[in-house]
Length: 86
Image (cartoon, helix red, strand yellow):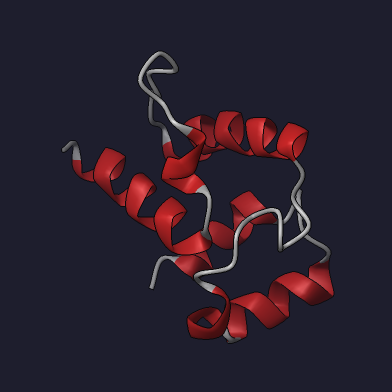
């Protein structure tokens, strides 16, 4: 499961105790929006920039839609697509 890898990405945006709870109960939280997890819209943009650095991907911001990463599950799929070069 990629959520454990995402720990490094999310640690700057979610409190440590909350992040541990989310990681340990991923199935319960995977459909929560980032806003529901306490990540505001400005933090979401920082998170996207961090994704580029951490996962060594390049996001085309002209095609990028914030809804592509609005939940943990969608963010996981988004990163997998870039990592696999699809």
